[in-house]
Amino acid sequence: MKKLLFIITLFFIVSGCKEKKKENKEEQTMVVDNKELYNIYYEDKTSWDSGIIDSDLDSIRRMRVNQLLDSNKIKTANDFERAAIVFEHGKDSTNLKKALNLIKIAVEMDSTINKKTYATITDQYLLSIGKPQIYGTIFTTMDNYLIKHAEIDTTQVTDKERIAYGVETLAEQKASIKKANDIRAEVVKRANEK
Image 1 (cartoon, rainbow, N blue to C red):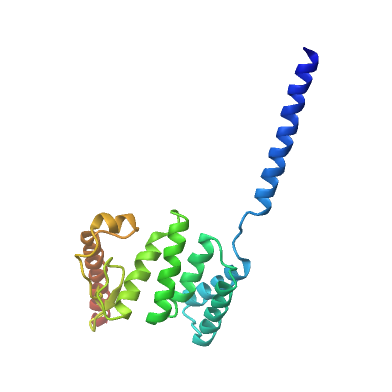
Image 2 (spheres, one colour):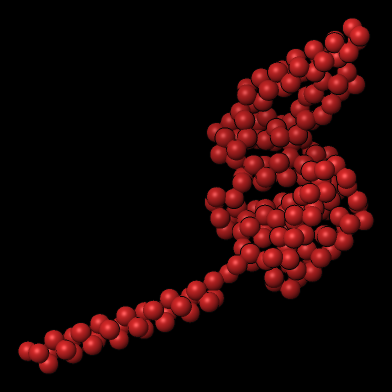
């Protein structure tokens, strides 16, 4: 009986060791975010957030991201999202199409990725090729400093889909536009009174 107990105990110890080795191997092959891409994304974001945009540097960043993509060094959902944002800042239809493809991959890989980025890039891309936006994320400023939606096709996406992508419903968007325009009108009125 002691011998049988010893053999069973030994079996579980050996099995546990094999399982630990397997876990360690999985940890070693775990995919991590690309640090170089993060740095490129951070530089790009800082530039755009500050309003100091150097189109030559933007172009160089996109070229480097293309090289990282071509060499399969972009692997995680975060990487694909960051790459998409770098290309989004290219603002032309070619870069926006690439950004849209990249953010789509990111969302497919990880459902926690900010889906509003997908909706925004979709709208930017559609407008860049002369089609109306569908989510309603893009606004334009009129001559009187008031804002309105850029051209929008309200029939392509439901409010339920908008909400799923982190976008306000059409009614909420209209209310936001009205509120923003009321504030802008008040600012213009005060400036004219001075």
